[in-house]
Image (cartoon, rainbow, N blue to C red):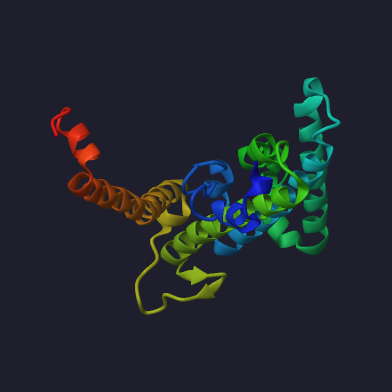
Length: 228
């Protein structure tokens, strides 16, 4: 149970080890559809993080009193309530961003990241761990889609957060703010993320195995088909 783990390890889990976008490949629709600009990624990530944290907290609190037969409808109702709150707040406070994100805000209700954390984590753990899990996963998602949006905006429009940054450097390539460019950027970033954070672990395992094989009679025997 996550209650026995450090809440910080639960938090950092969503940033790298189980990053929902770059590692688990969840929530691909908003990750590709709204990331034509960095601010869209930031806004979408913030909205999803709010829903993640709040729904994780509530689901953790009610997990013992909700019958199994109605568990999924109950969780969807909780998620839908917080999604509606986010949508109304965006419409009132940030109408331009709300217009940019469009249908993808109400679709947070069926975002697989949100429901996966409810099913896999919040229903099995206490409120504090569930909040930290929501924060970690939400921040990991926010960072990932903001990076995707930044790369696409800089290469495709020559701006970042609407500010010109590539003047006299190169001509923007419009393809990067179109769907094919989204898939291209996403593919390269997923590959780079997994290369950076997987190779170190693999190298460490290889070094440990080599050291053990060289100095441990038991390992050497096993590796050589039972010969000592």
